[in-house]
Length: 135
Image 1 (tube, rainbow, N blue to C red):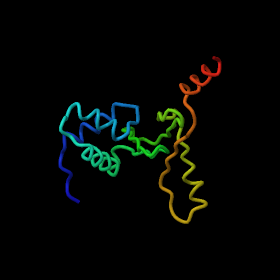
Image 2 (cartoon, rainbow, N blue to C red):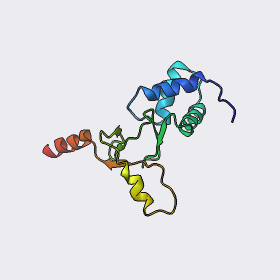
Image 3 (cartoon, helix red, strand yellow):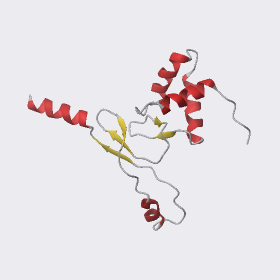
């Protein structure tokens, strides 16, 4: 395998993801990186996000709204996706490591890892619903 050529744009994308907990979409990453690199294309951002994800340097998280989210935090952890406003947050809970072993017991193969996203309504959406109901 040939060595990957250094790219300032790729480094900027990775740096942004390492310093945000917003779990941005590719479009959001593009808007941020475009401030530093005005001539960067959306296609370049997509290619670099996919490359960084394939290399294991970031995580790509599929969501029900169709827009993948990206996370610079690569240690095992779980996510929450609000089905109302679309926000995505890290869950502050211990990973269930034995789930791989449990899954292996009912699978003809080897489970190496897992990814879990919880779905529901975030506290901000719940709060806005309760305020609207009180009116």
